[in-house]
Image (cartoon, rainbow, N blue to C red; front, side, top):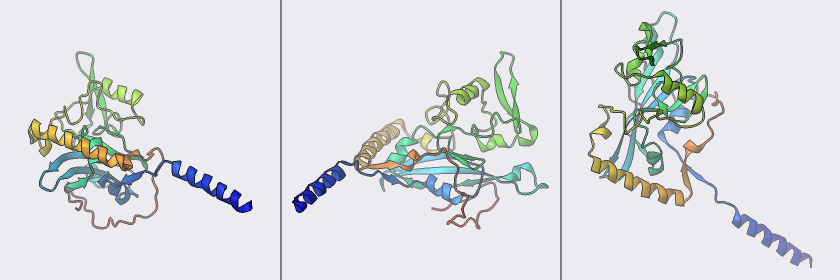
Length: 265
């Protein structure tokens, strides 16, 4: 009798165990590597600078612009407080490529005062635009206002969209009210991102529409196949908490404070 009860209990246990949802398998991305590499940096932005698909190798690719904000010393120029690094082409999964295919030219990862944000937003929105430390809103004759950096911070325009691009206050205020810390933001009328922002230096924008359409179709199929096997992007991790300030297992000793630099393959 005791043996029979044991078998029943074991059977129930096995049944319940088989009904559990299979654990999700997260695909590590180049952005995860950046988070780890700059674990001890309190403020930075990462912009999706370019994207591509290599038909010969069947690989999806990203290239990033990393803007690190670190105080050098009190005598250095303000511009020296910002280090810009350009990554090489980094392979990404179909899931990751699909998730970020609207985000060319956008900030796709940022860290402010030690707090990570993995939501996409117009470049500079995370801590510079709207910050009275760096500039102010200038009103036009029609009543609308756009963001203008103070003279000493004018160089910051080149870090993001360039001096010819204007950020309007009503668009920014809408972001702060409805999207800040909550969801991706492409502008009230989708004025930011891949389909509208014309980054002349991005190889993606030099591709034919046929090529882009084919890539989108392929990545949708490949992404669905990966998801059916239980995979998903690590972007789904919670990003509301503060990042660890433990020592980094990747060495940062080789980083240079130049206007641009390689990040590695």
